[in-house]
Image 1: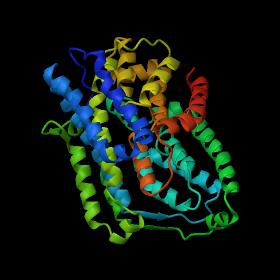
Image 2 (image 1 turned 60 degrees about the horizontal axis):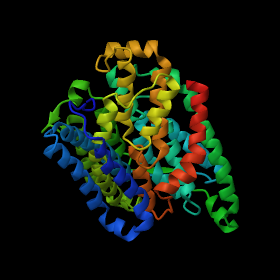
Image 3 (image 1 turned 90 degrees about the vertical axis):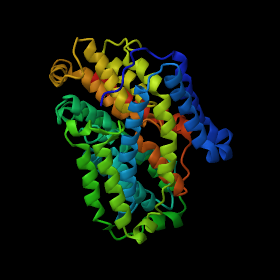
Image 4 (image 1 turned 180 degrees about the vertical axis):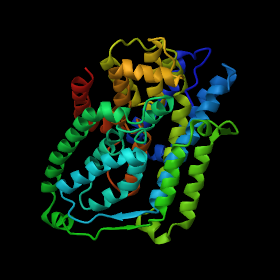
Length: 434
């Protein structure tokens, strides 16, 4: 379903609740950690209700709220179902958790992200990743997992990341991004893995010898909970149901794919063995945290997206401009509607409609660099913050529940995204897009 474009644009002041929520997510864990831990649901939902009240009481328009509810339920159905199903699968990795093996593990995750999606790969691999590095796991390991597996890895197929899937539904050929974006994918993933290897070598060498000896102890390879792979397959199949089925809504908000995903998650939860859940330390804490925060995010970002979709905020004439504009907003807005908004703006400048598959195919043929810029910008820059892409915050929440010391919102950006990720993505844009 395309993002809803308002007949009457909201006031620019209505972007403030979204900005306030971002500031709360960034600063409250530092300034008032105890308050935030206990009251973040009230803050997130409360700011969301401010925006909802504006649309009901001032705009007298329920449509944006219904659309946001549909998008939120679809988002949580995908995230939640993969979280539950992966919680019933236990993977033990054989071999030494050395920097080299860690790098290979991330590389496998980058490839797998194109087969089962960044969300699927993240939920399936984050627990083994934490376990195999349990004696020296740091924020470095979590952040680079988000960079590689949860975002940049999934840039080659529509399965990989939601923005590319939206493009596929609109008419972009399935293998188009692989054909045009493979060079950018190779550069970004290779550079990220190289930087990770260098930093992990330093981390490994600084660890006491007793820790290094434990870290290099072999563990038998094994996978438990294989029946849950069937439920995982059901979820992935639901993603690719025909467009007519996907746009069939129950009660105006619940889609058929979301219903299938929720049913698969329930089947997995009630059939999974208790000892596997215990081995994974499975609980619903991480998904509840993501659920509450993203209620606020999906509601408060409605005005920002409507202003963006109107075209008034888009004055771009070059592919590299679309790359950074799409990327900059994808780091803090939902990267799927951001992708669609910039694609609509770019096609509109050529008197083409994003709602016409023939026009999308024509645009892809005539302006491949612009489409590639929007595609890679949305996927790659989703790693720019914890809220840039759905799996990011879920990975952090799982790591936090596993007692891993992860960087807070600002330190993630200041210590990792800006000095490491951004230069690599600038280089990719200069080589591939410019």
